[in-house]
Length: 286
Image (cartoon, rainbow, N blue to C red; front, side):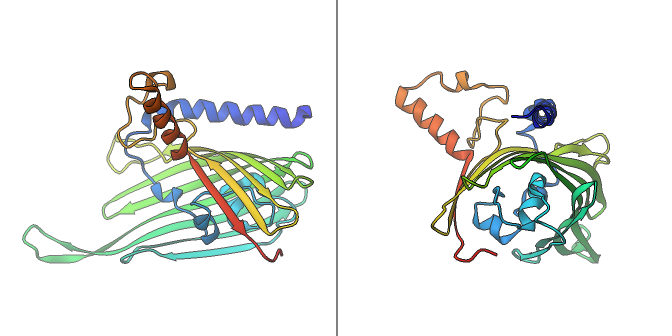
């Protein structure tokens, strides 16, 4: 690997490690801005809720994985809307553009609207109405290092409002991608939602963001319209069971006690909780 890509990769890995040390201890507590984890497009939803490193120019993928931005993705517009349940809906709008000498940029807006609510006092008398919603305004940048490696980052400004409570936040995504056209193989490493609240719902009560560290792979077939994908999520936290042990518990502690079969079953169960497998059928390529 050339020295230039390796240097950038080391910076990315150091940044992810530095932030994940603090976030590891906060993983089990309540998190804010969970809407950032919602799948942004119908394609991402169909693939298990996580973006995959597809080689085709899909704006929905590089909303999540900014290192996928390339010169093939010029002036693309993506608009998505989901009528969730009750009065809740959410959506995304994204656009990409290439600036000579600067690189590839994207802009995106992601929102969730929780609808309107009736306000009443303790005696049941209606006193008015109010609404609630959350919004993310995102700017992304991507750059090719060579024909195989690329890097990218998103910067997000976040606003959340629930009746008389609101909060501002700032977050960033950092990504590195690899693509081999001859092998029709792609991979990426992504650290999402690295950041913090700038203002809190309650004074002095800072809550963690929905940080995630993911590793993804995809493989297309040369003579068949299929793409296989595998995404491994929450890589900074091994135990994702419903009743996890101490946040500082390591793999060796999880393996203590029980029969060998029980330990292997626990290990396999935790591994699969991190794993999202996908198969995409695309009869016609654009």
